[in-house]
Amino acid sequence: MSETTVQDQRTVSGVAIRLEGVTKRYPGQQKPAVDAVDLEIAAGETVMFVGPSGCGKTTLLKMLNRLIEPSGGKIFLGDEDVTGQDPDRLRRRIGYVIQAGGLFPHMTVGTNIGIVPGMLGWDKKKIAERTDELLDLVGLDPEVYRDRYPKELSGGQQQRVGVARALAADPPVLLMDEPFGAVDPITRQRLQDELLRIQEELGKTIVFVTHDFDEAVKLGDKIVVFDVGARVVQYDTPEAILAEPAEDYVADFVGAGATLKQLTLTRVADTELHTPITAQVGEDSAAVVARATEAGEQYVVVTDGRGRPVSWPSVAELSRTTSVPGTRDDRLPVVGLRSTLNDALDTMLAASQGGVVVTGRRDSVAGVLVVEQVMAAIQATRGETRG
Image (tube, rainbow, N blue to C red):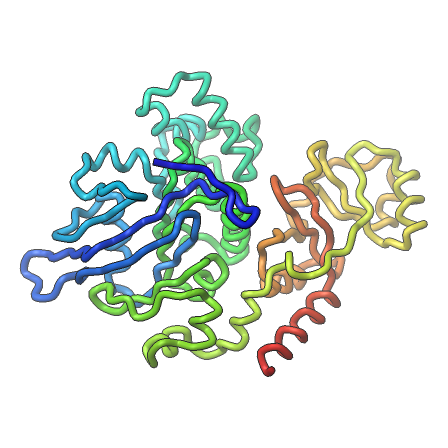
C-alpha cells in the first residue's frame, strides 16, 4: 500500500486518503456525530483537524482506522476501499499515536516498539534492527533506552517511543490524536520539532487532531476547520486560513493575533544561519580555544561522534579544561530547522548564549541562530504583512 517517491526534493512514502460521504450516527441522537464528510488528503501531507470539543474531529480520525465503525460512506487509502476490510488487519497498516504514547507498562521500550512487526511475522533480528533504527530516528539512544520500561521515562520520552511504535511497520498513514496535549510547553515544542524533522525525512501521510490552532499552523501543510457534525468549514493552507478566513466562525476560532500567528509560518530554515566553531568531545581544549579566538567567537558548540550537540560552553570555560568535556547540558538551547521563529525566541529567552543551536537531519548541528537574526527576520515578515 505504501509507495516511496520523491516530490520537490522530498521523500514521500505515504498514500492519499479519500473520504466519500463518511457518516457516524449514534443511537438516540437526532443529528449524526459526523455528517457525510467528503475530504481528500494528498500523499505525504500533514493535515491538522481543528475545531471545538464535540465537533466530531476525533470521531472522524478514529473512523480512518475503524476504531469507530462508520455508519455510512467510504474510506480509501490510495485506490483501496478499506471500509469493509478486516479492521485488525487495517490497523496494522496504520500508525496510531495518542496522549502519553499509550505504551504497555509491563513491556520494555523495545518490546513496545516491536509489537506490530511481531504480529506481521517479522523475524527477531529484523525487529531488533528496526527498533534500534526507530529509537535513533526519534532521538533516543538505543543502548540507553531499548531495555527500559515506560515508568522509567519522562513524558516526552514516552511520547517519542509512542511515535516510534506507530512507525514500526513503516505504515503509509500516521494518525495522531492530540499526542502532545499532556506534556509541558517546552517538551511540547521539542516534540513538535521532532515530528517536523521526522516527517521531512519520511514523508508519511499524517492526520493530526489538536485543540491548539498555533500547533496546527506550525505542523500542518493543510488545516481542516470543523464545525458541529464535522462540517468542513475551511480546508486550506495555514497561510490562506490566516489571511482569508472563509467565515466569521473561522475568524473567531483563529482568534485575536492572527498577524502574530503569521510569524509562526516563518521557519528557522528560512533565515541565514551562523556557522559556529565546533569541537568534538575529547579534543585538546587549547587548540579549540585558539581556533575560536582566531575566528572571534565567544562560544563553541561541542558535538558527539555523530555531530550532535552536547553543550555550548564559552571560550573562557573551555580554557579552564585540558580536553573538551563530554558532559551533556540538559538545558542546551536547541531548535530544529523546521522550528518557527517564535519557538527560537522562546528558547533564547532561557539561554545565556544569546542564541540557539540549530539541528538538522538526525539532530546534527546545522548552525547557530542569534537574537539579532531573528529580530531582523520578524521585522521583514511584519513589513511583508503590512505590504
